[in-house]
Image (tube, rainbow over all chains, first blue to last red; front, top):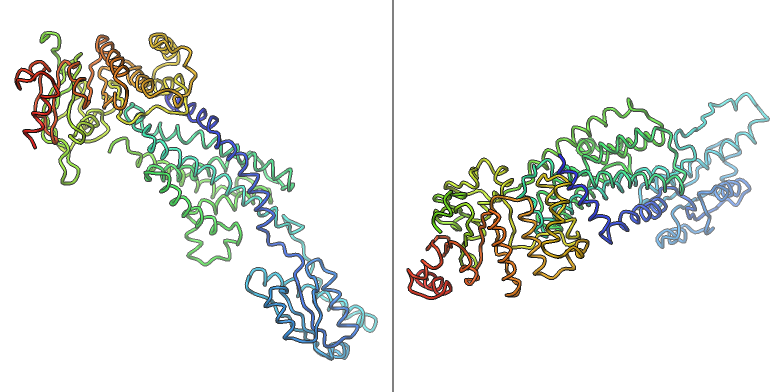
Length: 372
Length: 247
């Protein structure tokens, strides 16, 4: 076992000495957290809207000012012409058209239905859904006020409606950044871990130094361990670094135990690095490694639930996610950080990944050939 | 001379290695005696490297019987590896590690203790007079020095046999001479040396040589005997005669 220590020592010396490696390890998390967390957000603010107010009444103006008063909408243009409003949308200067028909106020006050029309730009369906939801929220609020102002004093008893009040748990201010940040941490440690390990062994193949190792009596699993441990340590440090940045820059909540998080990450990384090691035993040059890892990372990341909830994916996609290590850690890191889940809550994921990791590492040991 | 080398340390019988339809080693049979310097000659592509990789346990033969240091090459590669050193054609020390780090790493993988490594490292640096270079990166050294160090690393764990695959490729004649001094020194310390080369002048330095042409061993004897048999003055002419007969 002593020879594994020599291997680990050698890897660390090489990593520290490599002038490009340290910047990569330190700068990547910084860039990813700053750029991705701010950019890849679904928070919708300042949705551009055009208003067609055919009524020009105090009620219609009240509704419009309700929209303007909310942080989500910005009225860019008022017109009486639907075509003109459409043009705004075609030119991508508006994402929402609110059309208030004539007689809006009259219908409203006589107790009839007073319809308004909302036209939403649905090129991005998620954004459209949110726009629609926000609009309905504003209109519902407007309705409530109308009832309160116009009906209340006549028959107070009738306003005893069901009061639906919203409370958003675990992320009360609906801050999407916190949700993104935890997801990006997962990607961060995986990319660092899987890429570094995969490229490492292939580079030894390219340089020819692997042959010098293959001619020594080192046992295959010892070699794999010697390659695994250094990058496992680096990836865990990377997670600590990323969490620290997240705390300082975004004040990400840490409700659960950090020990639990790191314990889970340690097991998760066996899978991520085992995958990298397996790829590197199969590939013969860095180009192949890049292609294989890129393909799997891209697929797995998109399916992991970082942007879209896994629950809303089709059944087959959920099945694919059984082999997607990202999906496990993506779920668990959010559970631990944002909900304060304990070990019993994540035990299933923990043991699944442990078995997964052992399988991948065994495959890597088996596939690593000292002979041709 | 003949009484000096008695025990066979490498035994090869009917070794065949095929890659698809191509036969790289065609029924090789030879023995290497303990303590000798055995030259394994042949043109580029004659099958030298293939054979040496089989002897080192890096490649599995298609058929035939091969024993190295008393161990079977099919089943006991790890025991073989414990008893041999290997220096490949492709230079294979880590360029971004220092002399000291390279030696410590490889010695460590062979299972030597840190104390033994330290002691023997001091000896080596002293013998090569490179105490002042020990913390230099390999990348900064001239090729000749790299080769000498690669050889020193290959015999650092005191193996019974050292395999050298074209160790002097691309270095100047003076360095080649110095390199052969190191080979003699290793042989004097009881290490059997198995060396491939296509420099025929180097063949003269060996105790016995075999000459491979197109995957077969065409001749095997002491250099002076070979020259006598083929009625020529140099190994170069022996080689040309053999290669010409073939083609």
